[in-house]
Length: 312
Image 1: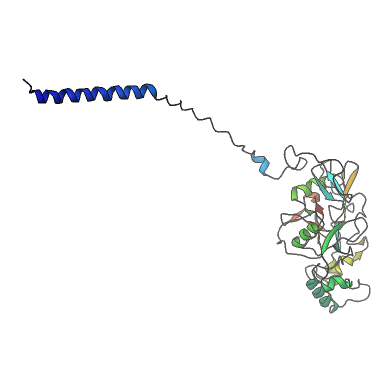
Image 2: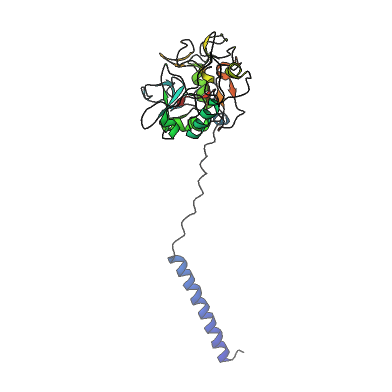
């Protein structure tokens, strides 16, 4: 038989247990059910570019797939609109002082230090009668006061002796830029997509390239020397001046609609933004037309055969 005092303790424990159980059940009834956990949404797929979009475009296609067209008439008057995608200078550039518009000599590298050095050196190397005289650069170019800026116009001597660095700076000073290689080749091939501006087969003399004379050979008896001589681009042979004025060969034109770009093959090699130069110059022995390319020189290299044109 359980003692009365111990029985009272058991009764108290049982009552407390029942009370706790009723309290927990009441809390279960009063507490709101937690909201259901939503299944995570599937992640959005990121755009993965087609590998061909990352490569230079094939000639004859747009520069970018479905490239947006630009408003008609968006190009400055001295430039040609290529498929509504970009603008390119109609002629090879010549340099002027950005502040005054005065022309720099096209026969010297545009920095004053190099201009003075070339003038002094080739004053010491005289040539006999019948050879071109040493051109005198303007005083402001010698004094270092000029900010070279690119201009494109018909009937002028284009500026040679340009490095890729100075060519790019001159385009930027004019509010433009160097062309990409893809832009340049597309523009050169014209709307018909031909290897040469005038057709698919090489024609001697249509563009100013593959001339039989080399100016350094004529002046110095060695085609590999004196490539900074300011007289090189003043040499002429039986066919006329080796370096021709812009637009002087009417069939060397890359046609776009009723407009055209001149001298993209021959005359001067032209720097583009990947550090190569394209098109060949007048004495380069190439029949590659718009595909002619040299990539063996750094962008700071310059000599008489190098110029450019700008894009926008």
